[in-house]
Image: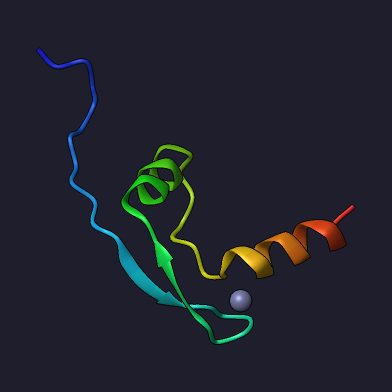
Length: 57
Ligand SMILES: [Zn+2]
């Protein structure tokens, strides 16, 4: 019996930012993190995410 963990292999992938159309790396580690949190893939680059966070109160 397994402990419910699914071993998945993630590879770095390039995503075009929804906000600024810049290409950024969505790293394997980040993909794993997002998956664990049940989030969808990143749509925005780090700087846009940061800007959004600053704007959200
Ligand atoms: Zn961006």
